[in-house]
Image 1: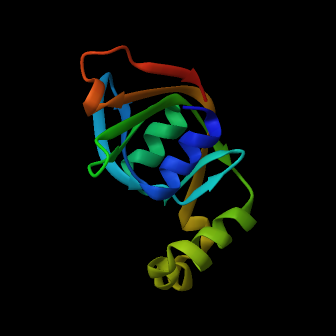
Image 2: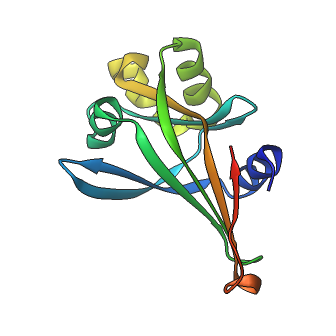
Image 3: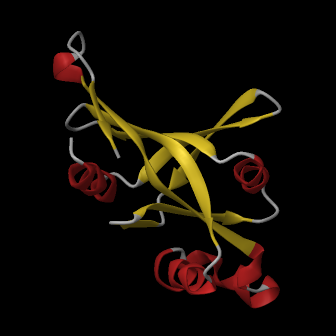
Length: 139
C-alpha cells in the first residue's frame, strides 16, 4: 500500500491498537485515530494518563489497524511527535471527541496532549495471502 492508501484504510478503520513501552514492558491499548491527515496520524489523550507519559518518554509506537470484513491488517510503526498547537487540540475536542467537552469545561484544553505519527514503516498483512510475503513500505 502507498501512504495515501494507508491513510484511506485508517479513515475507514480508525481504531488502532497502539503499542508503547513502559520500563521495558510492552503496553497496548485501543485508541481512536483523532485525525487522518496528509501530515500523518493524529492521536489525543489526557495528560494524566500513562500513555501520555510513555509517549513523552519515548515516542516509539506500533499501530495495528484491522478490517475484519476484508481480512486486512495494516501496521504502522515509527516515532510519535508532540503537537503543541492548541488549535489542533481544540479541533479534535470540538469536532471529533465532543464527549470530552465537559472535561474541557472543567480543566481546559491543557488537560489533553496531541501526538502525530508523521513517518515510519507500514506493514500490510492479508488473510488471503497469509503465507505470502508482507507488503512493507515507507509511511
